[in-house]
Image (cartoon, rainbow, N blue to C red; front, side, top):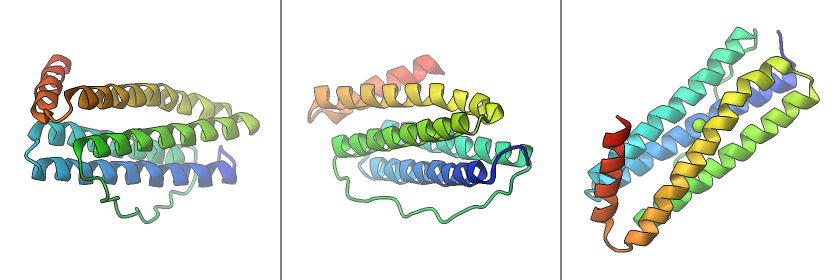
Length: 164
Ligand code: MG
């Protein structure tokens, strides 16, 4: 194995965290859908797919360096968020937590003098900047719109069409 056992365990932990984030986004997408907010539901479905890809990317790396993949139980998504703002706040909180976890992985890779894992993690460091930034923008938009959630839908739809 090209990485330490401790690093392999940490990467397995990150796979679980990414799948947990994916599952949480999927649950939030379903909540938006049940509220009739189809565009936000679509956006969060996309986030779900992205988080799942992150998990699979790490899984592939663990296999590539000769480590053993150990899949763990994914926790039940939180269901305490009732309003659009609460949901987006929880999503931002989750992105901040994932960013912290990636940072801790990077610090461990540096302490291990594990250059391969440092190089691999760099993509995730950049990705998290984007994730936190876009979720912060969405929260700002939701706060500005106040009770007018349809305005959020129309703005998000516009942004999604531009990035297509
Ligand atoms: Mg992720």
